[in-house]
Image (cartoon, rainbow, N blue to C red; front, side, top):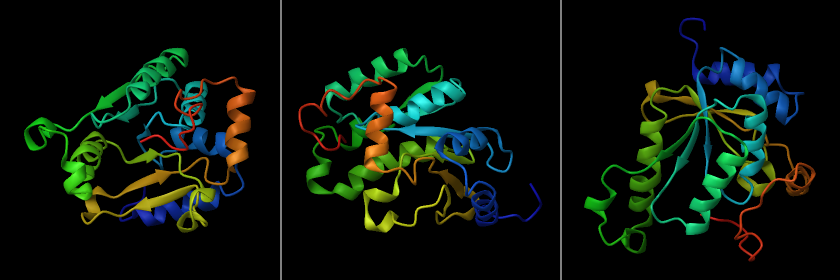
Length: 204
């Protein structure tokens, strides 16, 4: 990478280079392009997560998969995580937890008093530590999910307060519709999260 090249510079170049590529090609190139760097897939193993997990299993099963166990997940999610990882033969699943959750929230009730503090402790801080030696991560975000994501690109800059910690976020499924997701799951006979059948629209 050229000296003084910022994350924003790299993101602009990547979006220009891969603007006409589909999800599989974007992900394949992201895993190999030196301008992207060392990346991991961050997965909740939620309702639609199996799509990206399957794509990664096809392209490179050794890709780090970071699963943040907030220790407040549904039991079904924990079982599903294990089953999917085994079925897809993912070789590098890393279960990430908060280091001090028991000391700071022994009753697991912080989310009732302070949602932001709970999220920071159980999600944000563990993810930051897990990504410390990565230059970016793969997300499952898509344009159809909200108005604020209507112009979501394949590559975007994560801009924390500390510029040295800036990373690239890769959104291979940015242009997929909800129907595209469901079609892919059905066409590839992928296991669905058990709570989806019980009417849960999302699983956190």
